[in-house]
Image 1 (cartoon, rainbow, N blue to C red):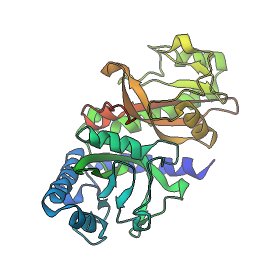
Image 2 (cartoon, rainbow, N blue to C red):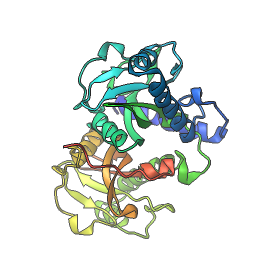
Image 3 (cartoon, rainbow, N blue to C red):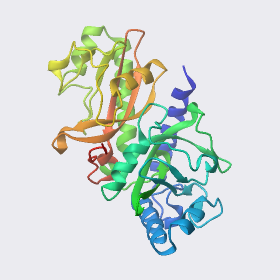
Length: 324
């Protein structure tokens, strides 16, 4: 089993531990610390945007870059980009400031910078992506095994630039299943249960149960499983019956990510978390970020499930169209 799979399991345990501990009342400066909330994350970024407006761009960028500054408090920090994708400030990756990262993706291929820019240009909102854990005040973006799911919030900061911050899912404390990472942990449990079912039953039986909309592999919240072979052929799905038997390996979302290929590669690497874009049927099929989890069943096929970002934040998380 690959190290990425083990890291994902550790993250899940942390999620469950935080949820069991309950929610404290951290201040704005602790927005990305333990027991953070989506409200505090939003307030943290909006406070930084207000600071940029009053202090001016140069002073604000210097403050955002300062590892001991007002907006860099432990795990909480603000980063800044222009709308061309140039990194303007990042206290944990200052060596990258001034470089263009418009086409940079996370470890699984999500174009997080482009999605952040589009969301900020639309007035701001939540995003999600995979990002390496920050250790000793720095971030090693080449350490693929350390990437974990992160909830971000972005906002416009001034003419031509935007800012953001984020919190690992393992640090969020929510008030209930419908607006907290409990939905994510329940989805992971479903995937693990489905993979075990697939190993314990003949393929035909497993595929029939995965495709059953009222079966044991659709949970109370409506989360379901999908199954593919490693060529990207859909093998089972409770709602895309017409596509079963078709290869979707070249499917591409509006931001350019070939998400079935990325999901397949994650499963082939041993499984774990992945963030991708997918239409939300409960939101008029508008494109939305989805926090997914996949596992290999055997050498022939794999399965996965996902939670829409709006389930985690409790807010409308439909994505705007990418900039041309």
